[in-house]
Length: 255
Image 1 (cartoon, rainbow, N blue to C red):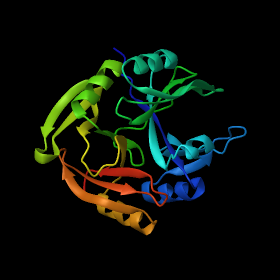
Image 2 (image 1 turned 135 degrees about the horizontal axis):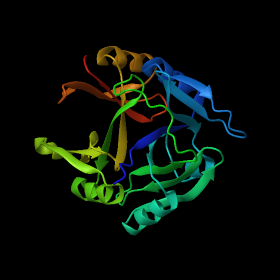
Image 3 (image 1 turned 90 degrees about the vertical axis):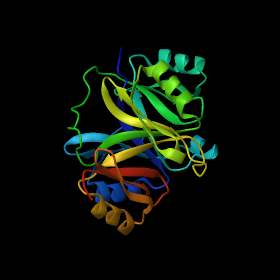
């Protein structure tokens, strides 16, 4: 069974240069122009390995009310086949599969409850060198705030073969279900709280120490609505938004 991991992260934002500067300061990323013809696309890297890209929200997405957000790309062996399978399972294909010359093929999709993500197949079979687990500036955890946690898990496991890890009872917050892609736990799913406006994926970026990172977020004009909070691991986490309003989170082995 293919593990179908997350392979790339993209920030669609209202001000790419300002957002890139913010993440460089907060997460220690470095941004460089992708050199893609006719497109302003910044590649952000950390620890010598690429993390993702930063771009302006496309005009048609803006007209549909899209706001600044991080979106994850899930690697699949065949984008068209997985898009069809996703649609048959009740998901939505927002943008049918298309090629990025020399890079790969992608589709913009959402699960049946509306959380958006991308399907992606690279045009070369070797993946770029991955950073070691825990490398600062890279995504260390993927969290789905679902309309219905158990139904969401059934959808993703059916589509990608993701498997159940530990389930943690969080009392009034419900059950936090860990999931694994290819044997290793890479995230958790839960039924969203009433305050969360819509189902969404939240990406946790690794940092060395949380308190200092929270100070960098605030100094850079971002907000920290939630944290620092200790979670099993033990790890420390905080939920943040950047100056343009995109949500992200940070995870660290210490405060």
